[in-house]
Image (cartoon, rainbow, N blue to C red; front, side, top):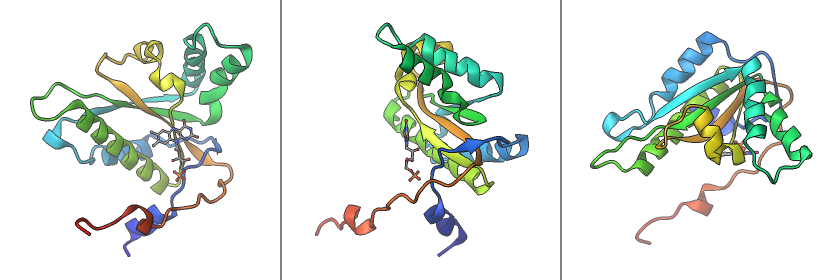
Length: 184
Ligand SMILES: Cc1cc2nc3c(=O)[nH]c(=O)nc-3n(C[C@H](O)[C@H](O)[C@H](O)COP(=O)(O)O)c2cc1C
């Protein structure tokens, strides 16, 4: 067992987060880790937007203002407050390009691998992380206002900060449940 697998086996997402958020040094290293993701063709099909401070309120306003006519006040208030659940939200974006051999979905997988490495690096630095999506991630009015192109998509809102209290342990699957040999 290596230190890396011990660390992975001990990690959890943490929803209860407060200031301080990761500082510039931690972020720089975490993004350097994110850039080590497996990446067919070295297309670098990911990018990130870092949101904190007043930006979190603007993000909440954007979520609420673009929700649509069916929203009631309760939903809108919840959306408006949702980015304030952490002192920093990192918007993870899949940014695929046209390629004759590497389909867009492979590039999205690579962006997800990059985001996973980002999460692990932030957790390794002692910060809590929670990957969230929800309806704003798939709302074209949100993605357009964030400056995404038609080819790009939000693959996650990565909430990060200092853990207030650890969440209860999540039951983990035994590998025998999801691994088998082929041919049997
Ligand atoms: C693509 C993706 C989207 C997710 N979206 C949400 C979400 O919107 N809300 C949520 O509570 N958890 C969401 N999660 C799950 C959590 O981040 C977390 O992984 C899950 O609760 C399991 O906890 P664990 O990471 O400690 O195993 C998402 C995970 C992924 C990979």
